[in-house]
Length: 208
Image (cartoon, rainbow, N blue to C red):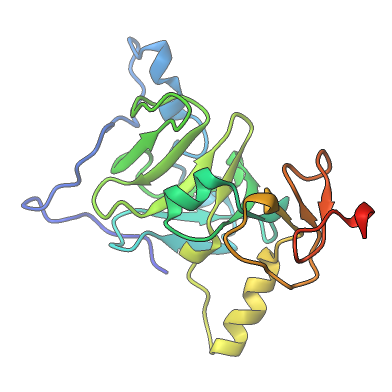
């Protein structure tokens, strides 16, 4: 996936933030615009790219320089079901420094589900301001990318092999699942390592 070029002036991006140039009077509460993953870096600064991704309309694109995520999970919590309009969320965890948005924060919208606010505050859900594709969840220390946005290359078989890099290690909040997922992957009733392990049918393993 090539990074998107400049858009035609008659179809501007609706953007909540257009600054990536430092100014001596930059407000403290806007400092996040100049930190990863929103600080625009040149290819030389960012380094070799492992993955490229973009939203549905293509106006938002980003690159990733780490081949494998720190972890990947399927989340079945009600919040993810509603936000994604899907039975569960597939998220891959990366350091923010390993992600680089081609146009910084321009063209991005933010939503705090805990505060019901569109003001930027972590943790926040990030989406494209134009097509509203969900881009990532940004936490205080890491970001959760959605592998569906990554442009895998080659044949279908080759793409499946590439997706293996993002294979989830577990299911979380499986107690709230919309359907059983009989894949043999560890399933936690809530957060991993701090809740009860369940089998594929949602029965606590220690009760079997």
